[in-house]
Image (cartoon, rainbow, N blue to C red; front, top):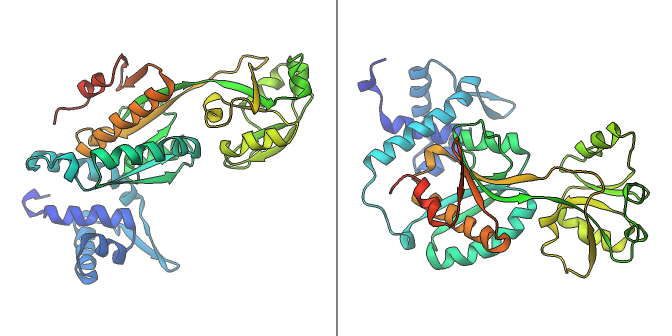
Length: 327
């Protein structure tokens, strides 16, 4: 291929087309006419020898080649932008939309404080919280550019994704303050009462059930809900129990529920803030990384680790800036 014949503007249009999978929406984002974007799509098809977007049942769908192109294309354009970027705009004037994929609990924890601090430091940055559909989906969204940041548990072997540990989560068993199981809480008391399970997919079994089966025990599931935020009020109203992350009770009155250590060992998990490495020099993203880390640090007072790919422990927020590429 003769690279001199490749128009960089064509790749910019292709990036938006693959994001939207829709010519009219892409044209609106690019502030171009629909015929101009359609013509650009035809040129891209010829250049790459692939349909890229197939039409079927009234909608367009990305081809396998188009899906494979999304991540590398975004990395290429990010590299070009870093190469020719003019003097940086001050944070107070930076206009940027940053999409964060997160489950309900991190969103509820972050949304208000983050909006408040951005109003003082970067008022023109707009944050869009997107629903969380599992760690694998969040990682795929980071790679293909459907999201800019994600809060989840990520595989440390993915070298293209940078991760900051916001907190080390542990599990507790929660119940109402007058629950009969609280007096002599052991595995028999725990399993004598029905449990509330949290599952975004409506599943009744979790890894805990597998763990119990290995011990020759089982529990009875009394209720399945899609959100941790629903659990505290349900526990207070019933005699159900729930094994939930301790942080999910932070916003609930301390005297409303009892917490007990699980009667069997239950492994916790690290909660990561993650972004694709191609965006590590993005000024707006860097600012949000620092602000979100500060918010979690204030509320949890925990050490944070940054993984890319080695593990590092940070004593203060300035250490995070040493990790990120210079401006």
